[in-house]
Image 1 (spheres, rainbow, N blue to C red):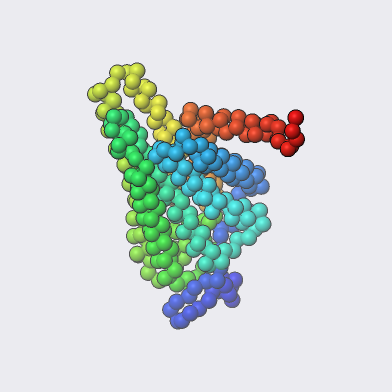
Image 2: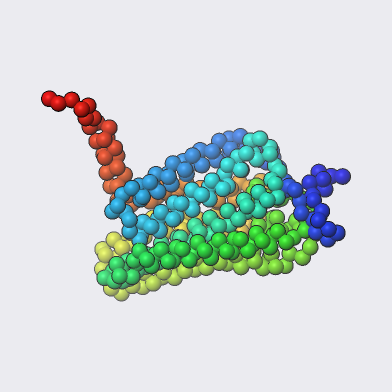
Length: 331
């Protein structure tokens, strides 16, 4: 009996739920140790950068605005998404722990689906903020209000969580009576449901729908907002004003590019079967991890409000350290 067969628990004649899944072998990746060191560095810098951004937005009252509420959510999803992915990847890579307990695999999958979906939709909400700010500047504060942004973000969180939970629930209804080796470095939805023995039509449909909802729809909405922004600027603003307005969108456009382009490139390459498993592992891992590293760096370096807030917190901290404490003595 093979290890896969030993790992499976049979509930009845037609339903088999495995005790464990096995991730694809990592030893074939060239210079794997150096790649692990790189991913560890990426994770540490991601935690530091996003943690700093979250702390600054939380501590500085002037940043308690709808715009930075959106930025706060992006930093939170970046931090949680990287934490859900990189530590397990490093554990698998460094200690050759290829097995993942069935329940942990489904939990792992749900977190990755949730935070990836949130990242894309938060970027779409950020484009809405830029659209209102440039096209309707006089009505900005009456349209982009704290209750409105809270409602939008909360709706997205609930919807994406429901979509992720439904996708994982459908996986839990499958029977796995053959190979238990997942052709990925984590419990990815597609590679997992392809291992099932029974009909996976509904899983494939949900996978396609999820890709459209999580990747394609936000990207289309972002593109439409920038088309509207371009039309509005070409009709109502001078060249100097257009350049000034577009500069406010630079950071967001960079975030959109580094998040969506790698995902689309990986999907296209995988669909065309023009990428081997080593290239897919490296490319997919970078796609899921590098944007979370770069997002806070881009916002910290290109947003004057954040830089000023960091400086204020630093000066406040220095003042507290250098101020002599009251010893209780009377002079």
